[in-house]
Image (cartoon, rainbow, N blue to C red; front, side, top):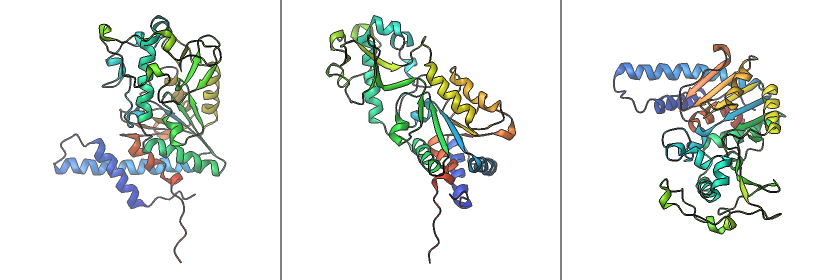
Length: 321
């Protein structure tokens, strides 16, 4: 594995990141251009430090949130244009909502399934899956702990993925509780070509419960296998997460605001024992740990992750003879 990246290539990519971060600002002045150049230089030095930690690491844990999926065109929940700006969470993402109006809830989740299946993993997803494969060859590990339920990590090729909030592409029977995977574009005929529920109740379409997804084992009503508001995370899944957090020697925080519990405690848990934590986020970095054990890049993870993980993704080439 070659841990040395060509300095000119790295400088170009880091300058590109700095440019993307500041593209909305008016940067025509000489002072502004000097500031951007200085910022890229600082970022380059920090990236060198990150690459040193990356080269030593035996077990990496990546904590991912809605930000990485947003770069693939998946709407977020809390950000600008997010789902909860249009709909009430209590109408669509609680057990009570499902029990009261399963037609409305299934229309929402069927629309989300079809939206996700039209999306593609972005360079951030692909960089993580590529890094996992390269590390595995040398007996090392990279595990993704994701709050996302869209399955884009798996579609990018990642194998070691822990989904703490469940999956859009799994169902759970309300009667026999059997959990099964379902990757069909239309989960049942009545939900084919699903559209988002109309916020106006008078314009909503009501689908009879008998036509909603049913269990093939007991004919019970199926629900999306996701964690709704008011529900606890699976204890066994949390045990798996903390087992990974306690074993890792490098933690990457990607595309998450770290506001939702218990996921908000994952990075601080790692940082508390002095493990290096690196943030890749479109929003301002949280800053886990002290200045000696943290690193951050503000900007699209689809731009920064391929640069950050380049030492793992760049194969050593034999010189021409």
